[in-house]
Amino acid sequence: MVLKKNEFGGLVKAYREQRGWTQEELAERWGHSRAYISQIEAGKRKLDRVAQVIRLADILDIPQERLEAIGRGIPERKIKPASPAQADDAILQMLLVPGKDMVRLSWLAWFADAAPHIEESLRELMSDLEQALTEYHGEFVAPAQQLLAYTHQMIGKIAYDRLDYAAAGGHFSTMIDLGQELNDADIITTGMVHQGDVLRKRGRYDAGIRLFEAAKPFAASASPGVRGRLYMIMSRAYASHGDEKLFLSSADQAIEIAKEVKDTLDNLANQFSLVDALQEKAQGYTVLWKPEEALKIYKETDRLRPFRLLRDKGSYAIVKAQAYSYTGDLDKGLKYARRGLELASQYQSKRHIARLETMYRRLHVTPLGSDRRIQELGEALRENRKIRATW
Image (tube, rainbow, N blue to C red; front, side):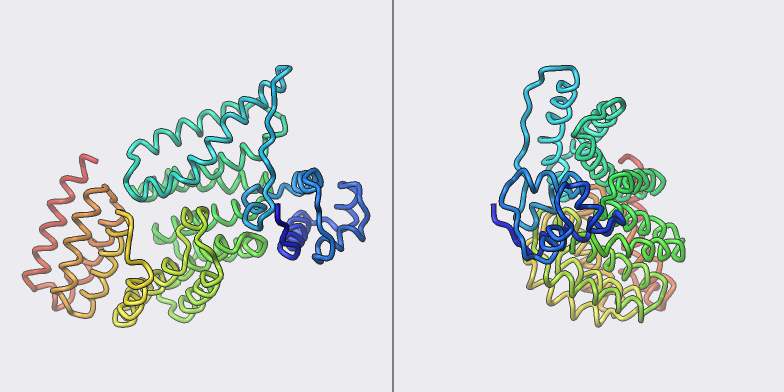
């Protein structure tokens, strides 16, 4: 395994400070000197033995994903049950190995509409984990809780797409609780970002923004992709609230972070990349009635992401429909709107179709509302509403 000294040292320091421990306190728990801890955090000392890394990661509860991201993964530890306690360990381990892969890939599979039964599998995994954790106190508690947190995140995102904000909020709240129990900055921050976005969608802008601000201290020790997504969703809230200055500040921070972030599976599943950050800024401009600025950005995102998965295609068509229509170019705007409605109906996203309904309502009260093409869009949306009742 290759150790990136400065990154590993920074990770150790971040998780130590997150727990409020001094270097002396960590040294006492680990059985080494304070000077040794100081050298590791400064990147002046490396850990060559896997056992050392495992022990230090266990003490600090550093997630496997954070170690893998800097090239210091911990090999899977396999066990052979010899007692009831070890049998419980085996049960958890059997859930963890395939479960982790399923949850990490579930968003991409669902996003491409290639796995219609993914929600059922996630709910089964959630039930199995909760049952296994009821009376279990072994060494796999923390990784099992971490997996459970991300399972709640994925189910919550599916509920959010269906506009079931109460159910989504419940899953994100559980995610935050599990993150706090684990003292995991990534999980806490991610849960708070989702919860804040739910508040925004329910019109509770001030409460959502307060939650985003409360997430910042956790984001400081979270992975860059998680921190970047916080600023990206904050920009969305500020745009919805009509605050252009804070919208631009947050959007630009997200873009700067995204420029340094790699397209890892975790970042893709969290929908954070340079393209995502740029599109969020473009959408904010559209919401603030500056669609010309949005269209400038879409030229860049067209170039950066020429191929898109199904849901991404539908969402992108809809945001472009909004931008073109708000400039008064109804031919292009409604062409994209019809395409977006067709795709969103195919993968049954109530959230994406709701964006088109919002666009229609905003245009309907302007002089453009009397245009025959706008009226045809309204009729298509009304017909679609009957179909959605069967979903």
